[in-house]
Length: 269
Image (cartoon, rainbow, N blue to C red; front, side, top):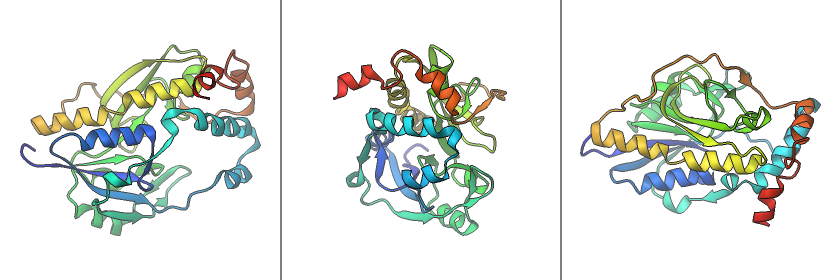
């Protein structure tokens, strides 16, 4: 890799990113010898909150309403337009095929077109759980965050179940994806203090605090031409969590400050 730019593709929905993602990308752009070479745009139809509510199972209603509120006050979820940093980057729109409830795969024609760009890394900031040929189309694979300790919490929502179970530490990993959920090769792993009284604050701490890990690993590739595996591959038998049901949400919301994340709101209003 020495002397050659590290070519990175971004799986995204456009040039407007959540704040933690925008932070990660802008830090990458400040690293010498890195080139954002392709935007792989999610061309799947998106659903608004009204349509989601119509499709929603009533057992998850409290979670959906609560999470819409949290997204409005969590700094890491604020939308940031970084289009001025990506003006010259080629773009291609991809519509994936569903191969399960949450899993999707890329069309062969799109795979062939992506290969033309000879990418070293693809970073997933959009699409659902991806599988198939796309996972090996770039030299160092597709990288994705899982905001949780994969040995304890797989699935989603990120950073939620740690608060629910009173876990004082929240883990996060940057992984090279494979076909198994949240069980890819770990490129970087870290831990953060769980803010037990505020989901928004805990979410911000983990998402913003881990955003520079992509840059760390890219610098390692640029300097040595390889990734040194610091976390041995260890299959995870952790349960796969899904969105909490109404009974779980009532238990969660009965905590001290969780109804309105009062500590966070008082500092941001």
